[in-house]
Length: 108
Image (cartoon, rainbow, N blue to C red; front, side, top):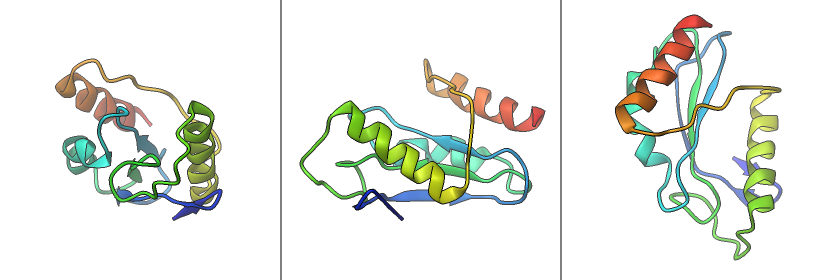
């Protein structure tokens, strides 16, 4: 998928009309780090996407990595998916992060 001229790698699972979740990684990682929550997410009803930010994983490396660039890429990714709003779940510990994502999807 392209956003603002940058190809963004991502992994997706599930589908349907449920509330989508977009899993982001830390700056020293990529979307592959979100494989656990992505696999554990319900396959029906909720689309779940693990994005590779620019310069990470399967995404392009355009040479500009300012925080505004990451924000712009995320906005473009969300626009391309038709996602207008969402909630932030911050990762403190991997298992708690996976549990929070699953809890959020179950409540939707």
